[in-house]
Image (cartoon, rainbow, N blue to C red; front, side):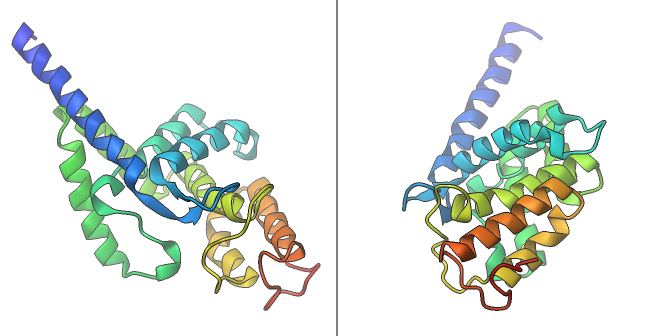
Length: 209
């Protein structure tokens, strides 16, 4: 690659980095655990990657943890253009998918063909859930907002219509493959009921499971 080609490649990467910085402006539906301010997507991506490191032992033996962290760094990048999709809103999956595919092509298309392909492959792997790394990354992604809302030091979720059974039913499919994470989720919800952050409702207090 000549000097002009090398400079063009560097410029593409820097443009992409500048564009991805906009993740810091995209708010999620949950607040920070210790603050009433809404968490932004960049904060979530960093924190869930740290969660993957700290709870690596919750994954099966042989899991490629470097790939798990790569998947988590990439999984929400499209929200730069697509915005955050709130799981509780039940938007049509086809509508969300079309918006996110367009966003992925727009954002990753800033990079060279090889780097575009690399990030697109990671994003699609996370979405397809066909590898243990993708399923583990998705499980961590699912449990993270629970920890922000109802984990240690938390103050609850801004949405007041959430109930224990609904939360656990929504999360179970992603978490049950990883018993440690599923147990944490159940304990977090029970603790939230005990602390008055969630109404017991469908689940009897002291018997969330």
